[in-house]
Each structure stands twice: as C-alpha cells, then as structure tokens.
Length: 261
Image (cartoon, rainbow, N blue to C red):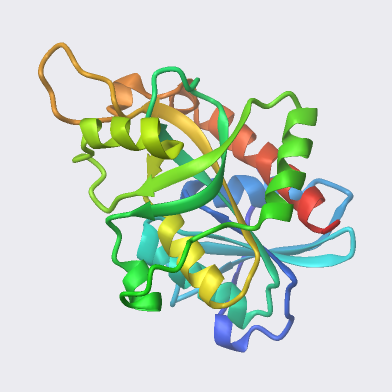
C-alpha cells in the first residue's frame, strides 16, 4: 500500500468544484480506494484529505478528465449530510455504495441491489419534507445504465425497494417478510432514506448500490432475536481485502457509468 499523505480539507473552502460524487458506507475502505485510483492511468491528481468537519477521509481526483469526490457516510443522518456536502462542491450526480441484509433467503449473499426507492422508520425524511408523503425515488436512467454495466461484469443484480432502519440489531422479521411479499422490498439497511431525501430535495440524481451481506429474516435455533449476526455474514467480512476489492470494482463501474449520462 502506498504511503498516504493527508492534506487538510474543508468543504466550505475547497476551491475546485466536482461534478460527480461517490458515497461509500464504510470509512475503512477509503484508503484502499485511494491507492487503487492512484495506480490507475485513467485517474489523475488523486488526493486524500482529512477534515475536521467530517467523520472520515475525503478523496478528490479526476477520472477521464472529470472531477470526482469520494466520501463515506454511515447511517441515514450522516448520509444526508454527505449529499449536502457534495452539493456544496457542485456535484450534479451521486452514486452511493454500501451493504444490506436481504428480506428473503432466496436472495443470494453477494448480490447487488439497485435501490429503486426507500422507506422506513428513519426521521430524516420528515426533516426534509415534513408530513408530505414525497416518493423517495432514485434516478431511473442512472439505475438502468448501472444495471446494464453491472451485468456485463457478471454481477447478480436486483432492482427493488429497501427499508431503512436506525436500529441495526432490532429488525422485525415478520414486518420485513410482509414488505418483501407485498412491496418488492428486497433489503433492510441504514442509509437510503437519508440519501434519497436530501438528493430529491436538492434535485440531484442519485443511485444506490447495496451489496447483500446477510439475511435479516433468519430464525436462529438458539432463539436469538438479533438479526444479521456476523457469524452469518457474507464472506466479504472474512477478508478485508476481498471486501475492499468488491467495493473498488463497484466504484469503477459506477464512475464509468455516470460520466456517460
């Protein structure tokens, strides 16, 4: 791994605007992505920053001559802040990449879910739209192009709805099974309503890719009410390097897709 030289970064004072933004769920993948981009000829001016106002590191770069920003956001409220921060930098398109738990045993771990819409118990939506029931829809054109390009890479792709929760270990299995059966709800996760609320409010096209890491509706023989336990998680959690490589691949596909929109 390259020696990372950190620079100071503040969203309010960053002089160069960027047109494309990537939001990654997990902060620990940022250094890996930085080194990946720094060693690819398609990328130039790759820099990594620390910022006192953001819980993680920020990557700026140029990809095929287009300026991009990559940041991390874990949880719905932070995800909404990530969208707003990218907006300050002039970002016009956003793709978010993270993980989720499926709502059916028939959905294979390692599949990639393209989020069509998000709903749930999260309160960020109310902060943006109050009592108005505004549909939280991702960008159809961007979703379609991502689906095509992901399938070209032999990635198993599903398109559907996700349920956002703020209570990671207290998912309701019966509720999720109901949503799966009657609402094409494919997964539960923690960011999408925040991401889409902010993006829709700010008129920024957004797509969200979620890697299925576990099943949230498994009934454990020991009677445990905890869902998505690490012992049942997808193999990406058994190897940090494998997890990073999967995220890295999705980042490249996402960038190659969005700059052609």
